Image 1 (cartoon, rainbow, N blue to C red):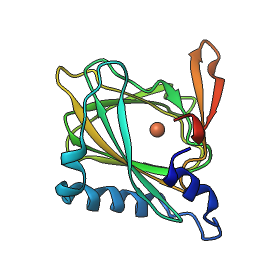
Image 2: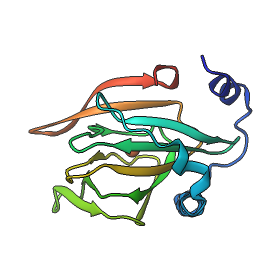
Image 3: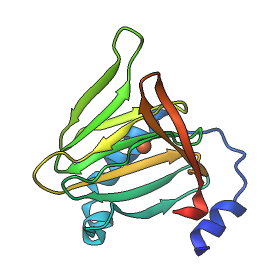
Image 4: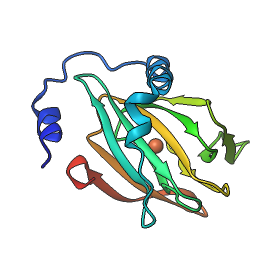
Length: 166
Ligand SMILES: [Fe+2]
């Protein structure tokens, strides 16, 4: 277990979770501090590359890079609220809309931030020709995530991972 992960588990989580809008502001502020994240970006051919760059009692910030074709698959955030911002490149986000809407697809371009509540499910993918870099904030810090498959009847949970598995 990494030191910061051990720290995250030792920290009391007594404070209220930050709102999606507060998390959006955090990723926007971090994005402007390029010296905090740009030198740390790596690209990995096998899978998305990621690193946690901030850890606080009530939130954390991750830096992720995406080569063309890399994606998350549908997942939740274990009850955490979140926001992400595309710092470089462009991504596609799939989510389920209401019964009338079905599957929603959004292009998320550079400088754009998306924020979401604790029950949100999405699939983020790089369908562009070039790499992308994103900043993600979660509150409380992620403790687990579940994966889902899109089947005829909707999204079906297929796996749950704890934070010691990433
Ligand atoms: Fe996500």
